[in-house]
Length: 335
Image 1 (cartoon, one colour):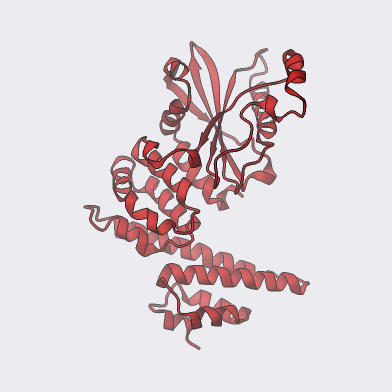
Image 2 (cartoon, one colour; image 1 turned 180 degrees about the vertical axis):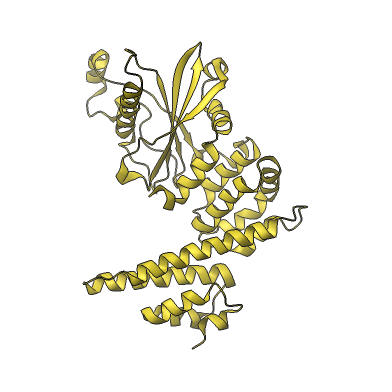
């Protein structure tokens, strides 16, 4: 499921690099703690601890680093839900327990567990309204919690709320800064108009981290940005001395089109008994077809949109197949 999740691909593709991810985390940690960690010992730990049913809305990374000769784990949970979940810290406690259980299995000879520092990266539409300490998730008056304090679990979380951070304060290495800004703005309805002010960051990121890393960001822009087209991405590099730009973006757009076409074809061919399910699949085909046509040919005439919305499965499949080879919109829609 994670392979089909654009948030997960971008998050792990960028922050999963140990040096890059740790450099970002050090900015979240208290300066005294960040300075005491040994950057030469950092590594990512494989695996995910997120509930399987939530892996379309959460992603995670685990880092191990030495502090005064002892291992410390730093857990980074990426929340990409449409709204904040007040039960996040309850789930986070479950994930921490899973980390310790995995450690126990892998180190059966060790009686004590390593400390785990929980961090959350959130990019919802508004500021994070939920609790920042586990005790705040418990249903009891403050006076009662104070009395129970020594006997109940409690921990704080290092929260990075992108919606609460001004763009100009997101000052990091070019690729990391670019990723955070794209995560923050990509789901806005006019994201395409935001892209031009990121032009210099895109070029810097290519020069510092290469096309493979930057293509993760470009793919996210195409997939998540509702109004972003191939032409919008080409403009980002129009004035740069990067001759590979046009070819890289064309290859990326063709890959996106091919994946969208295959997904629409698969959904369209799936057989179902209920008429409602059949209509639901056709509506999915229509949405995918319209998205791909807008990506390829930008704005569509109203007559074309109306024709697609009224079309049956045979027409939808025929037009979807033509997108990859047709030179004009008229060729796609020809009878």
